[in-house]
Length: 124
Figure 1 (cartoon, helix red, strand yellow):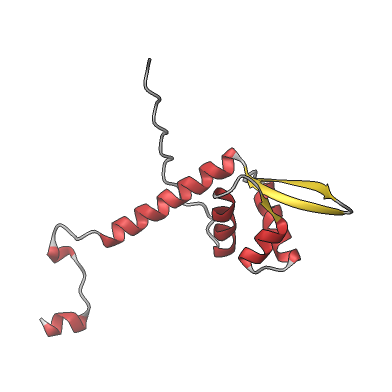
Figure 2 (cartoon, rainbow, N blue to C red; figure 1 turned 60 degrees about the vertical axis):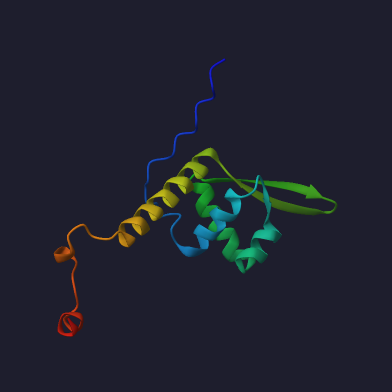
């Protein structure tokens, strides 16, 4: 029996569509669930109905999410989920952010290459 192939990490790719904080929080919330109800997303993000609808439409138009309207009693309820494209875009965006942070926190190999402010040079 052949062991299962480990999942391939997505290539880091900064995604301008996902990056704004509201959309990033929305996509991260959806990444942690199969489906999420509109009311839950609205409360979690602290958005008005219209603001959340606009964000969902933007992500749906990009193919990152899918929405479903269903009847619950006498009311119609909307729920959303990430598509495989959306999951890949989110994972790639997170990988790009991690790469940026890792680069920013690395110790330079050549201390002379590290820029110092004029105040730091005077204190040395």
